[in-house]
Image 1 (cartoon, rainbow, N blue to C red):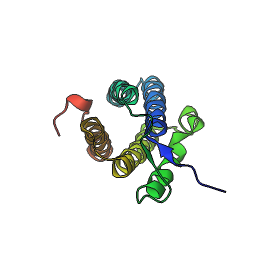
Image 2 (image 1 turned 45 degrees about the horizontal axis):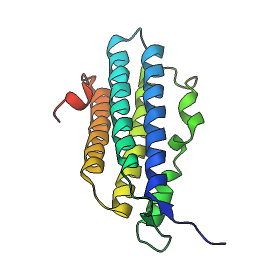
Image 3 (image 1 turned 60 degrees about the horizontal axis):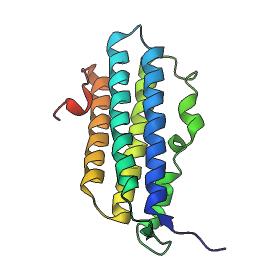
Image 4 (image 1 turned 135 degrees about the horizontal axis):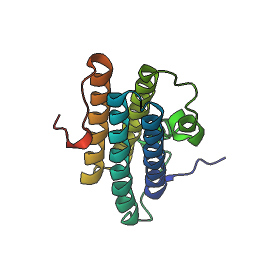
Amino acid sequence: MSIPALSLQQVLELAVATEARGAQYYQQLSEKFSSEQEVAAVFARLSQDERVHEATFRKLLAGAPPDKSVAPEDDGYLPLRAAATSDFFRAETLSDLSRLQTAADALTHALQFEKATLFYYQAAKDALGASAELDELITAERAHMTALMRTIISDAKFRGLADPW
């Protein structure tokens, strides 16, 4: 059994789908916790940011060379495959909000999602090479992770990509 290469297009398609699901997930969390104004605002801003990320990945996908790929023998292949196996890349992981009963649960789950996507995008960069757009998204995901952690620890307000970290 031969192991197939991962194309840049496949990597970017997963990124587009993940950002779209993330935007929807955060919007649902904003609605679920609407009685907690600051928490709802955090999730609403995350939803907006994920839509920006989705658009960026769509542009990258449109301009991606169809023949660029990572072969199983390449150093970056296995870390990228491992990153792509995160539960957060399955649609059902982000669709079941019933287990998130408190704002703290939701914020912690969102932090785990941001960590998984950051790991995936970093693995994609390591495997496929740097691009200004991918670097920008990695920086934004890291900022989300930092802001969520800051919110969890100190209840700090979060303004998303507009907030200079």
